[in-house]
Picture 1 (tube, rainbow, N blue to C red):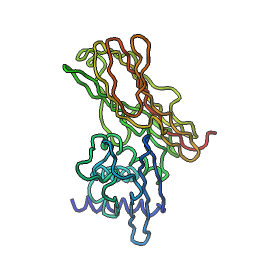
Picture 2 (picture 1 turned 30 degrees about the horizontal axis):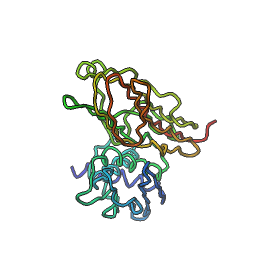
Picture 3 (picture 1 turned 120 degrees about the vertical axis):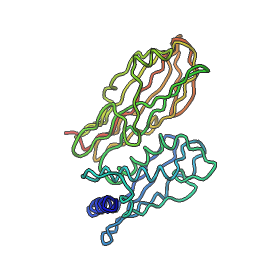
Picture 4 (picture 1 turned 90 degrees about the horizontal axis):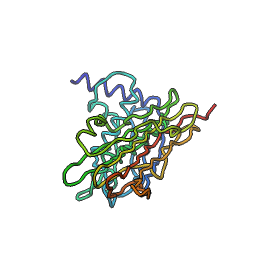
Length: 295
């Protein structure tokens, strides 16, 4: 185990050998932000990752416990390592992580944290990749889609586009970064719940243009066959996922209800709506940002 940790430590130090000082700030739809500055000590082969400048503790539920911040840092630096190593604490040894207390990614009790893991974690990752200049932003949200009534309930996270990099296009219709969930098969979903999945398809032209194109988001349309309550917790409904090195940003997400009388109720970054029989909920997820100027 000591060898495993020593190897992970050296793998991160080799990355730091080629990095330079950098910083990045990424805004959320409600005006809060994640800020990070990376300062590299070439002689000691270590780095300070400073999140000073990140918004103070969120008045809503977008606070992320500091463990989520550490997990996001570990994930990003593991992505930079080109060797097949297991995740372990050795990766942290060359990294000094500074997160001021009472801010959005290091809150104190009784801060609400339900959306920190699913949403704010994604902003931390994309802020780090933005600072490092390695890839454009991915969809940056889990598109938390929760619906049900007194009898049944279901919780879905919906895939979208990943960001492009200097070497490849982004992937379409995938879960990105700090998430790892699958959707229930349509046949099983419709057998268990009073809903009908009308559409689930690639959202054309939602990925940012560039030398390498951002991945496409998806469009998911669900018809409700009885009255329910629908909740959304999402991101990038106002601020688009950034492009990099001249690439265009990805398309922002959308979510709205087309009622049986054809009236439309829009839901933004977060909200709740009552649906009745034959109302259709339409969810369009963000695309990833493009990388490089288009040819």
